[in-house]
Image 1 (cartoon, rainbow, N blue to C red):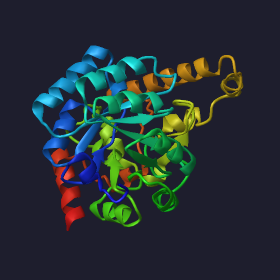
Image 2: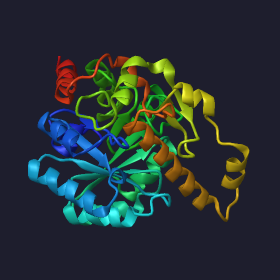
Image 3: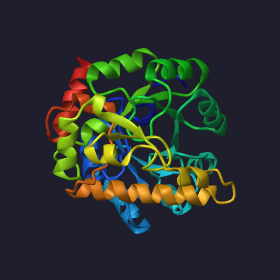
Length: 318
């Protein structure tokens, strides 16, 4: 099974997942992805209500028979996880990408209806765990990824997982061009998951300021912060981020060590951080916390999404 490319696993033309981006990914962007020969995945938490999630899935299925996915946060910070999973299974989405928790329940329920499950991992230990649970593929979240990144560079992580796992490995991070896709495939990846280069698209539903920041800033301006969600997350090093710092304060760290309330503290910090990102993404304010990865180094202008994808795929094939 490991030799299968992402194109075979999901029956798509190009081995590219438009990564699930908090606040950015939506139905319109995903439609363009499907029409362009790649696949797209939307975070369930991008929808305020379960009904909106269900409506989005049905709209995409009506638009195309090409596969798309939904990203579920499967730990206790997501209070709607089980209901979101139920909707995904009822609607029989092509695949689910799990993040930040055990995918055991997701795999069991999804496989019962023919839905594939692809799991985010950051190291070999977790890769072997999800493989044993029955995951269909692994997304190797490496050091170069945007959002919640991993501790290892793709140059180390991809070959390690390819050597030790029997299911396909999809690289997340360190990819922004067709040439880089080829490089990922050459070291053992079955495909790639890409997000940051699509933020500066005309169709992305975020503010022009957020899009322009992806043009104006580069790889050297991406830093890790734990203040957003409690988990290391990559953001653009804006003046506001520099002012507020990137580490949780002593009181937050103390609360995180209390076993009795730890899970509730994490859920609160996560919810608060996501609200901060939401305010920054859709309005012009000096309090800017914009999530992005080092691949914005290759973003030079705001362009139509289809043009970005076509350039990417033509370079990959060339």
